[in-house]
Image 1 (cartoon, rainbow, N blue to C red):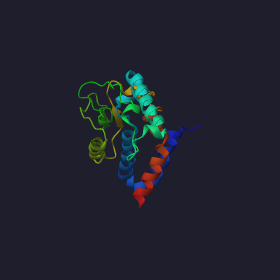
Image 2: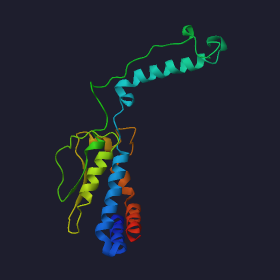
Image 3: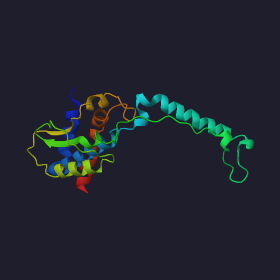
Image 4: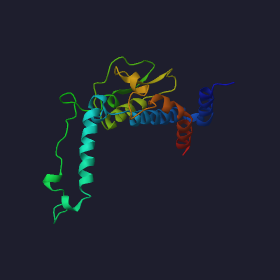
Length: 193
């Protein structure tokens, strides 16, 4: 039985014919975009260390919502909770000083024939800069390249791929690999247009 992945590659090559480079670039751009979009961005509110604070803050919110159902707890004009009925307490969410999410998303790299070993140092919450840099690299693709690598070398990348984040419970690479055939078909169609 033939390998389904190799069968999809053969079908891609047969469909693309003379437009191999353009069609390949189209596939690579789709792969990179998908990996970046699926990449979790650190959100301290979701961290296990903040679970108690998150639950407490939610309980305070729920209490205040419940208090609004009693008209005696509302101000006459604006219909807002009176001070005596409102709980204003909360617990702080912990994060390292100056923390901002986006390091993992900013460290996706596209390389040809060589696996990267260094991080980019980029923090890119939106992923736009990472995608732009990757698209520039992909634009240099030529037939004859032996391997194209989509890599993320931050130390916790493997854990994220294995479902450590609730934002990407099935990882990014595994899900993207399942979509290769669609990417190939779409790229060939777009190249022929």
